[in-house]
Each structure stands twice: as structure tokens, then as C-alpha cells.
Amino acid sequence: MTKLAIVIFADTDTAESMGRVANAFVLANEAIESKADLKLIFEGAGTKWIPTLEDENHKLHGMYAALKPQITGACKFCSQAFGVKSAVEKAGVQLLGEYKDHPSLLSLIDEGFQIVSF
Image (cartoon, helix red, strand yellow):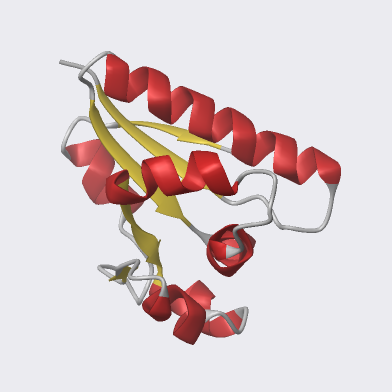
């Protein structure tokens, strides 16, 4: 079985960034359809996408809402650093902080996950 970790680092500030998130979501859907073991993580400036995508009027809200049950979490440190920690918590997305308040990507590699970053 494929083990895939999709990590979204893209900021919210450009159309290119939104395209990267949309492509991450397309890959996540393909992984789900293929019955892959999927981890979907928001890291760095990517944590800012959680409150942005919670807005029902956002172009990507529908994709986000469909994938929300599959979201593994968002970086605890970066959520705080980018000022979105309370919004991430309000959205019900788990804060991850296995290594110095960041998600442990090395642990995912050790568990056999392939990491794809957007």
C-alpha cells in the first residue's frame, strides 16, 4: 500500500499558491481513491490556509470541506507564529508538534511515507 504524506507549505498570498493547494487536494483525492495511507499536513505559512479555507465563499472551500476529515493536522509552532492558532483550533484541526512543536517529517519517513510538498 502506498503511504503518502502531503505537506502544504504554500502561503495564501498569490494565485500560484492557491494553485499549489488545489494540486495538493487533487493528489489527496487520488490517494484516497487509490486507498493509500494518507497524511495531509499544513506546515509553515501553509497553516494560514485553514482559516482561509473555512470561509464558505472561498474557491477551494468545497475541496477543503470534502477533505477535512482526512486532514492529519497543522504545525503547532507555525500556527502560533503566523497568528492562526486559535482559528486552526476553532476549525477542529489538530495541532501537531512532535518535534520542537513542529510535525515530525522524519518520523513519517521512518514509517515509510513518501513526502510530497506543495
